[in-house]
Length: 350
Image (cartoon, rainbow, N blue to C red; front, side, top):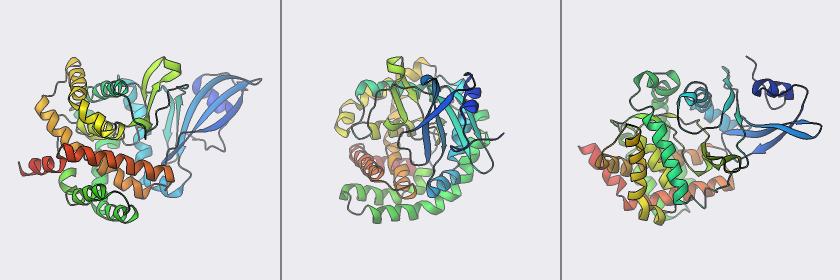
């Protein structure tokens, strides 16, 4: 199957994929600020009147970002998610019309356009009500895939995890060192957490959970669409390129820590955890609260595990650097309050 590039994309090709009439005009415009892939809004017009609108996603035009994404199978994971997993989940995602990837890691995904949506900036963070919607969506994803060994065995999931483990083990220490040099002017507390966590990377990566499930891997404000189609769709989840198999609290902790101001999270943590656990119980996949609290504290380190390497391997931008530092600031406050490093040490010693 031929996968078009932005230059070869035609109105008739788009129309064929989404069931629109042929012979229309195509208008393209950029969407979002993604650093490992590029999104554009595709609007089909007839006599100047818009008839249909979708969002297309293709590889980044930055060679370093595209090569990094390919090496981590990000493009393969996202196309596979939309083809094989999205149709069976209750987790709200935009309707996917097309998702293909070739052997050279060129891909394209065509999704329903959810605009207009409520714009929520990663820096300002979420409200508690928006956070509750996100936790309910996560409970659906996690409960529907818990301990699904047939699903986990698929090459694009656990095969990817196994293939990438040696790579991560070899390059992560160097990436942490690079981060500490590039961001040496960041707050001392952030640099201390990154330094102390770097020594524990093998232990963190070796964690196992009795509640293993499919996780989004980058569940945060920038990847959530609120009040889609002008309020018709309360929440839709996008950017599934880091989907993998892990503890559900990898997603829960990463979402809470990166999406809320620390003082807001510290005051509402028990209530928000209850939202997630109660929805899991309703779906028939309960987790004891004590076990949940322990895993949540350990996986509060996930923003450090993910964002430190990302900060030094994706295309560098002012907004990107500010976003990485801000999310790591939030993680530092929460990991200190929840004693996350100590909780990890206790887990390893047990």
